[in-house]
Length: 465
Ligand SMILES: [Zn+2]
Image 1 (spheres, rainbow, N blue to C red):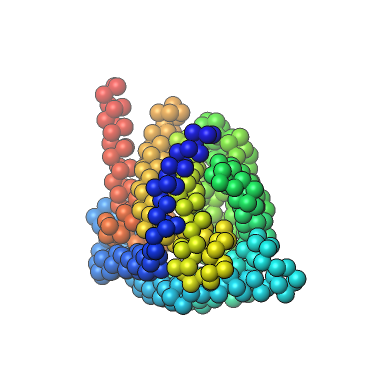
Image 2 (cartoon, protein in one colour):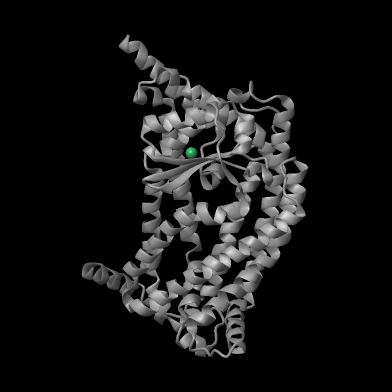
């Protein structure tokens, strides 16, 4: 532990310029955030002309009828336009908030809120919670009409929307209530650990964040998700038998098998698993069950279980720990730097003893360019995991010595095509746009790889003969 702290102290020394040099942090944040937004707009402009193509890529030619392909192009174009406008609009609002020093005002408003209830500025955690609520409300106001437009105009136009205005409002209120119930104690504990551990907060906060992540893995599906969706046990029948037998053969600790009423809000479909290492739950969207045959859904689940077999969720958890550690290790230099807060229009009095929540919030903005690169790296990693899970599904026959699973790759291919066609997913994708945004390889790439895995397997089988 002492080694860790001595290393962290050396890092802080290198960052000591933050406390001493007058740096125009505000312009830096403006430049970085506009840089990221303009780059994302540029990517959309690269992608945009591809929506004018009149036929799908060759591998997909047989799967799309003309109408479906044209629909997917129209849907993609509308979504791209919407992303371009909302991206620029949100950035303009954030930029104005930053320019007019409204973060400093939010801290003062938080102070007045708690003063109303008789608490003074010595109650830093309380004022921090009020500050977070003010920021949350301010950032929610522009996003509500945008999200309503997306649901009731964009998705509606392309036949996906199943949300009623009533459901939209109750979802919003439920989301806020749950966010408040979970977010407030989380932030309070987070800030308390800072106060309590002093300069040695890094390992303690890491332990706290890890515990929180694990608690959420348990709470989300059992307590939170039922507020929004109904999970019912999957009916007896071919799909259930196939899934249970697949799980058993792979020694996947399947506790419950659910069908989720995803169709209540949207016609998009999917499947996923969650849970602790010894007790897992599989959830299948009702839309997927309706649109694909049981043997194809089984192939989708074989892909999902490939993620489990290769421990992808665990690996991602480890990566996120490294990410959190990096952020926390860099932070102290910004925590004790009055000049840093002053650069964002905070008063001399507030900046002299920087509130942790404010310093951490501003520090996050400083990290914008770093986070953009981390996002790219995480998407790259996630795409590798997708290849690996596809490969797992293709090779499952050998792993389980189950000849009836020989065509799993083809079945997965068919299921993916159905998913893409029904979801009107974009099939022509610019490589740079994809590298930046996509956590999954494109459909064309996946089908080609599935064919290659299958050919390699068939080749190996022939050699054995
Ligand atoms: Zn996957």
